[in-house]
Image (cartoon, rainbow, N blue to C red; front, side, top):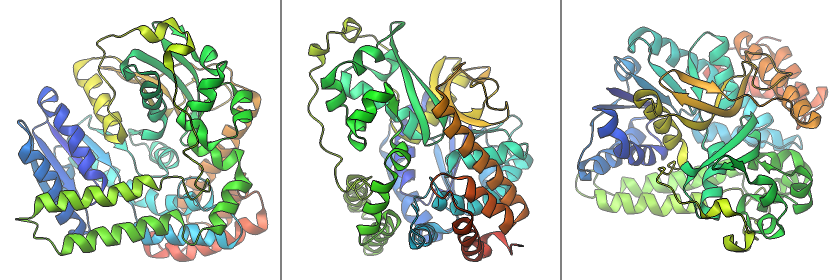
Length: 468
């Protein structure tokens, strides 16, 4: 079986191959094609991928290529994680939004809109190549951001794409770590949109323990993902919010912290990546791979240690240790043999592939068409919900009625996403302004129009000319 990773000249490739090596033998994955259009990045991150594979007892053949057709030819599963415009374009997206007094985060709000305008045409090209050259029935997993919006565009264009994001599944892994049980022991129900979701059920042995957890003050204070939010809000919600809801629930705080910072998150990532690549340039890719791996881990530690610190003003580590025994929940004493769900987007993809190939049912939070899961949304609306996955594919669980304020926010962002897809299709500044005006982090026609004009101009090299 052949697996393809498109966007392989990325820091994520190392972790992707780490996960692949845990699965390749039992899933009979014999070939991995790593594709990227940047020869320098493909050379370095491809070399690290091969170095990992060479140390494993069983590993697939790995090919590095810049040719899209070669990459997807006869592929059974394709994972896309591209960044059209590279880190430099992300920095532009964020700075343009901030110059108008708006949050420019790369997936949420104005920055995400601009990123999507570059991602959508590139992804359409990839999906069409997959349709022509991959094996019949090949599955495309999209991790290209903004994942939900891009997956919506691909679905609207008629391509069979499953959107994946490690953020939603990360809730389960955070819970597993905090409660000292295996991720496979829990069913966590998630609903909403990508980077706009909530977890409202945590089942162990068929019992929903979330109400007991949320009634316990030590859990409220100690659970790490809550560190983004005022605890009064958490008590009011009575559920676990996706970390990206910070931008909605604490908008003025996030914006103030971004404006005070000497560099945006994108600029910090660009700086770290440039330093990493410059360090790689001083090493011999044939003889100094151990040093290259050590260098990679050093710079990734810098990246991961700075996650969300800028937006929150550095206040992420104000949680206490959690005494699980003091929670008094009998279900937490259950210790079964279910496997862990490996962290990261690669783990989500491989768990999904395993469930499809081996008919091993699993619950995963994925971005898929709603199909009645959340009343009040259309069947074709791509939502981020917990799905049951097996040999028959991916089926979203029925969520049922959700709180009105959450539904209103979801519908507003979904309207923004659909208008954004139309704006990308028609390269229309008018539609772009209409889309951005809908977004609650913009919520102004005059600002939306200014953003639309500026984003159309900077994205023209990737999209072609826009019309008014």
